[in-house]
Image (cartoon, rainbow, N blue to C red):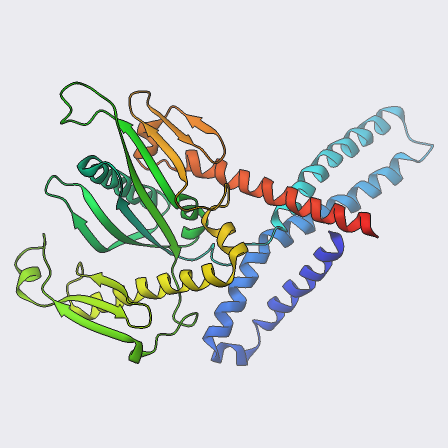
Length: 366
């Protein structure tokens, strides 16, 4: 581990020195990439340097404690400091192992969130609206921006389908755990006999693809305009501002009608298309990456029921890690970290065990 840390520290120092070079400012793309790498390495290097400082301090304390002419009280004080340093070293070692885990390259990106009502008819659509509200409130708590790209509502205020852009730092690192089937158990308002109904909503989360990652050939695109429908005042129904983009090689279609102009709708539609195509490409050519990205904890099957929201008992259960909390209202009001943080921790522990097992197997073969 420490040989790896030495190499990473050298790279960190190279980045710090290189970013001060005058010619780098002339290439903003390269500068941004190196700045991003520098910022990602900073927590690891700061922890490593604190650990290294602690090791040196402990060595000095042990050397001082070994002197024969010290008073007993001073020796006891030194031993107490040595013990405290040992506890801190153990804590920092654990932190370093976690920080050394390979990072999902998409973690710092913004995301595209898609919500679709599943089994359960109007009740599923109403719960899809509740999930939209939950994610919007969670985004606000994290300082992220949300922007509706496409929305298909029901007459009773439910959501058949929603495509939502969530922009900010580290969006995908948290929302990637939301991909899968969300199940709700509750008594619908229209249920006269008080029976509990079970409905499902499917959530898909994709990292927002940057243009440099996946360029689109204009010859592969058919772009149609049409009049928007739904709420939005006089403007939305008087102009053909809605955009439908068809990716001809696969027939994939993306629509956007929630922006005020054709240009804005076109940009949003292409953003979603690019993200979907990038995701499709990664699923086809990198099964390991796909499993890690879409379900960090569990089988990785998108059809898998990942979470149940039980209203009569006021509980939320995440089936991937066996987590049950009786704080349903808090979760639906945007306090999603009650579920997300245990998922992140479980993911880190699982990957840490995997890394340690690989190291163990490697050492046993030597």
